[in-house]
Image (tube, rainbow, N blue to C red):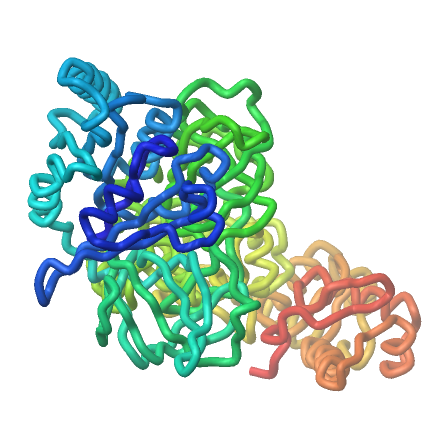
Length: 615
């Protein structure tokens, strides 16, 4: 177990730890000279062969609050130190606020310097402390009156601390450790230290070092100041690292991660817990997370929710807590709990989006959270696993219970997939109604018509699923509804026998065919619509048709250009086909409308290669 001290400057935190553990946690020459803790100090108290209590001695001076915050991340217990002669002081109050904002760890109180006051003063200070801690929801706290000089109360405090029991670690979480120190030892090499927030680590394991963005191997481990082969969350860990990284590349706030994560996160949605109302709905703030201190901008979205935009990305996960201080870093405003790692840039105050964020904030466990994610938008497996910091085994077990639909590498719910399928079917029916001359629609054009805001690969996979289910059919790459089965009537079949030989290598207009056969133009138009749906001919513009096998030849030319890494222009196409410019333009614009190509300036680029294939 790790226990962090808390309390005002010069209230005897370091001296108390020294009489408990026998270790002077002040290690810096400047701390010795000034008689004041400046940076984090560490002391260990072996209880037996299996248990060692670790203590983090934090600075009490307000100037070093950032160092104090780096020391209390991930702890399960805190030791509040209050001097009997001074009583409750400003940093007593602020440290209690910060402890509550970081997650309300269990708390023990030590009243120090008892040899300097009488019993009346002791009682007065004890009453002050109990009233203050009760305001922060710590009631009936164990409280010990002590003196480091006379040893008063030390044995009782030691006995109490030795009996504390830490909560069991969550084995479903990935290993994650925030680095607060890095140094080199002769004959050992690079060593980093920190408190593990989650998971476990073993000698020989490869970890990802942020900042340097490199893999490193764990050569040796110390946990609670003892050599071990395995360490876990809640322990103070020193790791001897092997890899192409130097001490100069490591900063306080870097992370050691079980899995690579190249970039941190900079636009978050958080649930806020404010100590007082904000002066402005948007304001610059200082942010403290684990061992990191960055600046950013806080924007309130509702009474409960805010957006945080960070100037420097942080390696955060959902449910992580962030301490928020004002622009001058002089006043603590409150804390934030991360509920979304990728906030929207636009539309962040839309009612449906805010309602979803509220539901996400209400999620009580991993399952509820992932369900909410998938309701709103398709989820990437890697992103969801990172957000919840689940091991691969834990994620697989959870997904086996959720049974989501996997589409193109993204996950969604069966209900959501069904809604998207209905949207696609409606779009396809609409297309048939207004484009009766076409045998169907290409999958990319259908995607852009039906669900343009969703990832293309996912919608293609959804279309494949619908094809497998028989909800839609395809003919030569053209998608159509199952009941879209055009056929000639007996009279149309006879008329088509007369019409088909007229189609050679050039496009024909409806009116020209009607004149050649001395038929009614409307009858010919209806006949050609059916022939086009059957795939015999293709309309490049309304009432102008090519033989479909000719269109396939034209499409192959564009495919050949694409394979050579070049685009198609009207001039090139006209030369290759030996047709007039107007016809060349009509063919290329038809390909653009069909979704086979897309236009970029004067160029036409291949978009959906599955269209216009030989049967």
